[in-house]
Length: 203
Image (cartoon, rainbow, N blue to C red; front, side, top):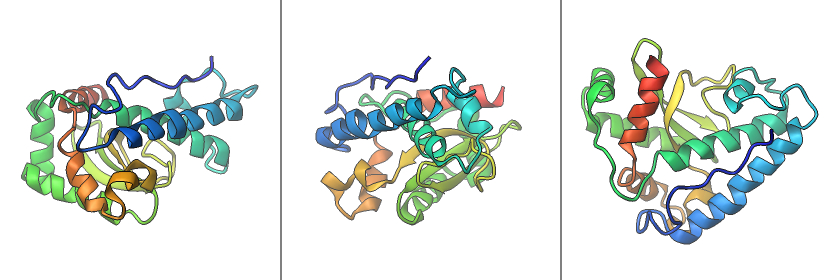
């Protein structure tokens, strides 16, 4: 079964003024759609066809650039849309709040660490909050469309929050002001979804 472009679950303009409608439209309907189409083409007729994306990435031949780039692009964006919402759903609480405070001492310290990972990722890439089986969390970044599920990536754990720092994610509105875009992202995080992913990753 071919992978399908997931729906956002909200309108393209729903995240304004933090992320503008035109950026969301292009990002979802062009960039993510392109990764989806190219991933399907790369796995068609291979033993990867029909496997869940997590299995494909977790056992990936990192030299298979078509699957690495497009599979990563498909997965990363699919996560990205769900960890944002226009309604401020949820506040950091419970076990995830405890894990973040255990690791970083305060939420502000976590925010600073995550923001630094996003701001200092050279060129295109992603910043991640990852969960580990022992309940701990960590922050890291990856280049291009790599993610922590892939073997040999110096960024371990299960991603539960991700921020796209490719220029196509913010340049129409923020131009070269990546730190402003990172700050705005914290206004639209769907902590209910992040907490759900944390619980799933640590059970």
